[in-house]
Length: 273
Image (cartoon, rainbow, N blue to C red; front, side):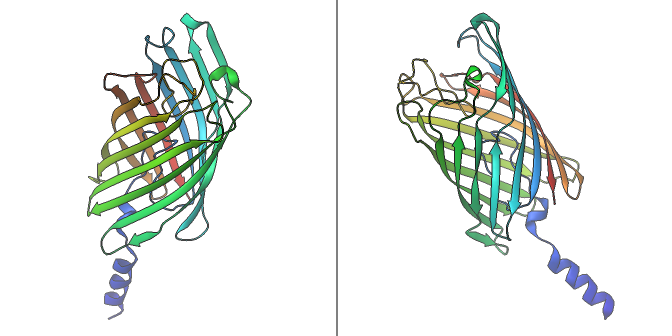
């Protein structure tokens, strides 16, 4: 009888969320629906197409943090770190601090039986002091979003939709953004996914650049109003430990308007506490 009770308690302690993963692509705006306490070191290598000021690349070194106040509410810090921007044709070779983004999210729906999570959230992004890397533009922006995840045992669908609303409409653009991911838990060492991310400029500012800046950068471009920038990505996570996930992804810009998105590689690590 003791053995039967022990097995029952173990089964009751399991959750469908144990085999889910956080998104790897679009790390600043594709927020996970799960509520966890974690640190997430992130490295991004971003290739800029030659159609924008002759092209170049940017390397971003950052750390995200999330603190689960309880099972549903988490405080999040999702943007920050050091950006190294190199655009030889434009004479740009700068290193500086990325703008800071932080806020909260709340799991309004956490339905264990139906394997469903719905988590709205709110973030504020504040300018840094590094204008040479296309940061420190305007008076900051708000991001209102909703993330959701639906599970079918080992198959999981994750999505997020939100709006970026600047405090100064002359200096920065407003965006509608949405992301989607499908992943499949094959085993703890290999959890593959495919993802799609898109940003649409709802209203431009007074900026003179011909395109907008996807996720890391907000130029406030007047000419970009109505433009959409999209990328498709794929990769995998590997569960190195019960509390540690390694993530790798590759993204490529799609559509007729590439903006500043050519290719992107991301390596991250989610360390849960």
